[in-house]
Image 1 (spheres, helix red, strand yellow):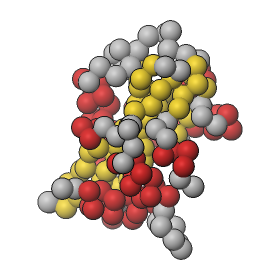
Image 2 (tube, rainbow, N blue to C red; image 1 turned 135 degrees about the vertical axis):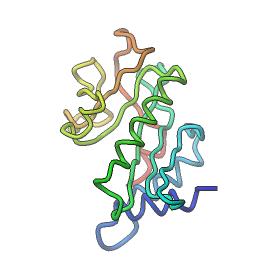
Image 3 (cartoon, rainbow, N blue to C red; image 1 turned 30 degrees about the vertical axis):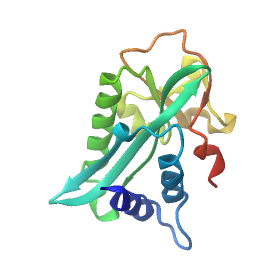
Image 4 (cartoon, one colour; image 1 turned 135 degrees about the horizontal axis):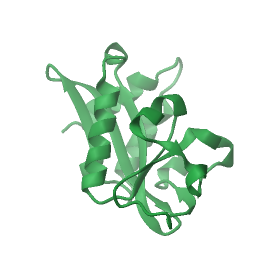
Length: 162
């Protein structure tokens, strides 16, 4: 029931001029792929209005199933009010409770380190694009083990949307 509202959040959060943001199109494609995990698509509400959305889909490190987070967005008028942080904490908790070993994401290390994310390369996990460097990060969860190494791959739509 939150499909249109969560898409609107992503479109507004990433709107930068002409055209529709890639994050909104990506969300559409993720909903239709085999990596879609409906239990890990979350919204945040304030006074009955949906103001934030984040999603994890099935990813892999080698053959080990794990999660890729993104997109995560917050309506512009609700940014810098803790909505994004609340979504991150909720998603990390849900992924951990579901027995996942890790969450991967592409983002600002200065921001995501507060949630326990570390540069993937430090853990022996190669990003999908080597140029991403320290911006591709991993959050180890309780089912993490040091044998999880190799290349990370997101759900297919991440490769299809530009």
